[in-house]
Structures are given as C-alpha cells and as structure tokens.
Length: 194
Image 1 (tube, rainbow, N blue to C red):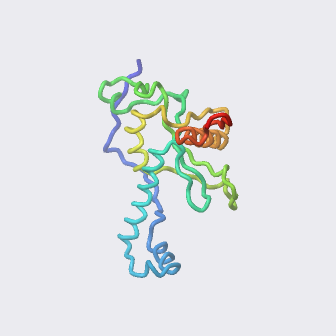
Image 2 (cartoon, helix red, strand yellow):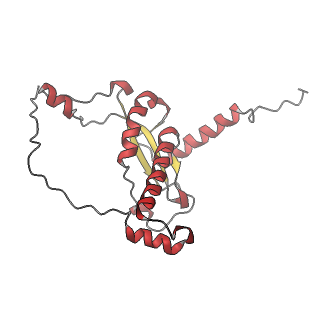
Image 3 (cartoon, rainbow, N blue to C red):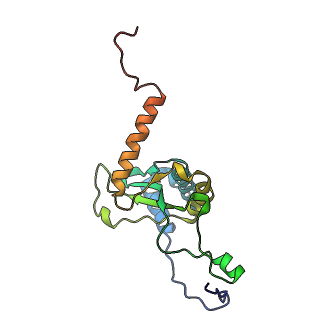
C-alpha cells in the first residue's frame, strides 16, 4: 500500500493565459453579417451561445447516437469503453484515508464514458478536417457523469480495435431498423393474407 500525502493548496501555481472565442470582435462580426443582431449586447450574445451549447450537451447525453453538428462539422456522441490499463486515482478519497485508492467504477461494471468527436464519416469533407478538435466543456462533463452511472448500457460500445466512424454507421443502421420494426413498417408481405 502506497501512502498518499495531501497536496499543498497554498503553494504557488503556474497558469497559462486563456483566450476565449466569445468576445466583442466575434459579436461585431455577427452584427455585420445579420441585421437581426444590430441591437444585441455582449451579455445577451454570451447567454445565447451558452444556451445553445447547453441544448447540444443535453442532446448528446440523452441521445444514443449523439448529435450531428450543423454545416457538416461532424458528430459528437458518448461511447462506453472498457476501463483503461492505467489506474485512475481517487484523489479526495486517497487524501481522506491517507492511502492511494483507485477508481473501480463499480456502478458501471468497470466501464467508462468517453465523449467522442468524429468528422470522418461526413458526406462532404471540408478543408483541413483532420486538424479539427473538440474538447467538451464543463457543463457536458458534469451532467454526463451522474446520468451515465444509471444508463451506461444504452450507449454505443466502442471497441479499441475498430474505427469510430464505422461503429457509428453500424449503430445508426441498427437503430433505424429497430424503429421500423416498432412502427410496423418492416412487416413481411404475405400475399395469401387478406
């Protein structure tokens, strides 16, 4: 058993400066492009963007196949993965007990939720699509965690040896077939039945 020391919370920290995408320059560009935003102030603009992002986060959490982003930018979805080989340390519990404690994910049978972004399965490729990256925000991560513990089996199981876009296509096809069966559209035709 390895001992765990509590970190020095009053130690000096190094923080890099962050640049936000929501700023007055972006607001001015939006005002130039559309007449509907000419009286929009910065606070309202920020609230609109955050509300839109919250809607997308809710849809990603509650929809098994995730969300297809507008303008063909890609798809965001939550996948179920096997637990990693590297052990995750439960820091608060380790500090409390004084011994290193690892997360075991007992609620989800040892599986983890991962948020995936893929733009390789798009119908129309856009320029430099391989350099695009998606990093989920705090809202999505925090809301996903408690929901995933109760509903972890409903998400797409992502295999490490297969490509993500192939798995997405396969699951979308399976869901479409299930919907047809539920609605009675896939009932076999019988010519002798009247």
